[in-house]
Image 1 (tube, rainbow, N blue to C red):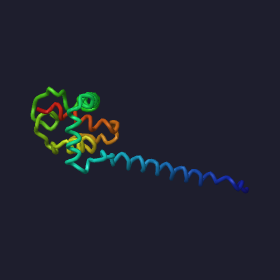
Image 2: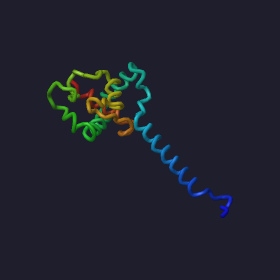
Image 3: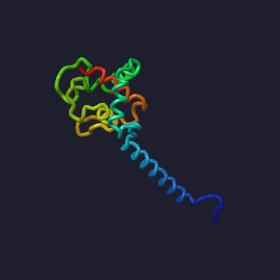
Image 4: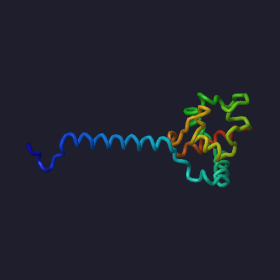
Length: 140
């Protein structure tokens, strides 16, 4: 039996589909493991100044509070929470760097060993800076 010239044998078609599926899974895994950092995250002094300025903008702080309430409140508690622990984001003590750019990096890449997930692209790109602005605005 001879196949039409434009058709692939069924076994070859199946193998090509399997290879394509494996490549798609590997691509998805690679994206999940490498969150996209903010544009200036590797320029800390400049980024710190931008985030501090954002913490003085009421609209940005309000957007950051909404993100905090949706994604962070369950683990980190309300901004009025007291206590000296890594989960308290509103005291002046920071365990993984307290500069604004370091806080932003923590939001983006997380600390899995401390059960802090990397948010990467989970919040929209404008939300991590707004979230950091909210945290900075609440620190005493």
